[in-house]
Image 1 (cartoon, rainbow, N blue to C red):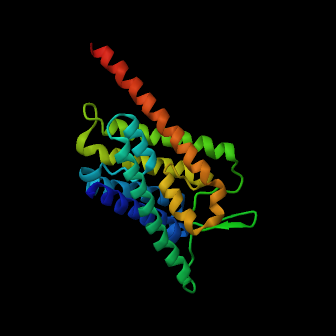
Image 2 (cartoon, one colour):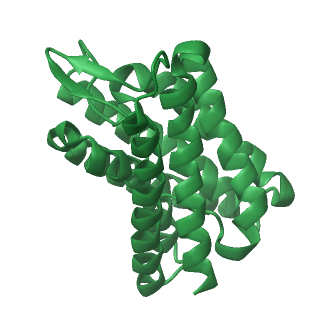
Image 3 (cartoon, rainbow, N blue to C red):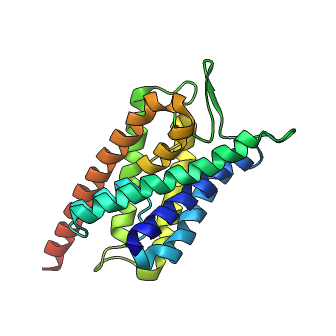
Length: 235
């Protein structure tokens, strides 16, 4: 149970602080600053709950870890449910901030695409982006991110206490690249929370699930191929 609680709390803070950087500070810090915030939040969480749950805070990571044989399917489902609940709570806090509507405060994380408005950094196509473009970006960026996670945390080939730094940097990098396309998901839970309070985001939500799932599977296959090849070379 403690693992599920850790995943829920961790995902709540990921959405609250990382997405919150776009909502509460986006106009001031821009895409580079928002990407940096995503990475820093994950670094902090890795060193806080990494020894409890592994700090997945992302269904795509949990799926990849399960497909790699590091976790059971039952535990995977528990992780994903906890992550979705945590994301919903984190997004709820952000919606509460926006709903207060303080005079003179300029919120970020708003997308106006031909009159269809989404807020609280919901994952939707940005002006000019296409569905195919977003799907490919989500798949490739998730591939990279999950590949880094699998490698950095590998029991035999990983980097132990330095894993959290690599994982956080990877999330920051993919966000800097992906935010201009669809606000960057690579995490279905991160997309789920804001979509609950920004319903215009639901038509694009499938991209934020299918893309990361494809990317996670590719990462598992690639890491397995790399480690097998490495083992044969050693032999």
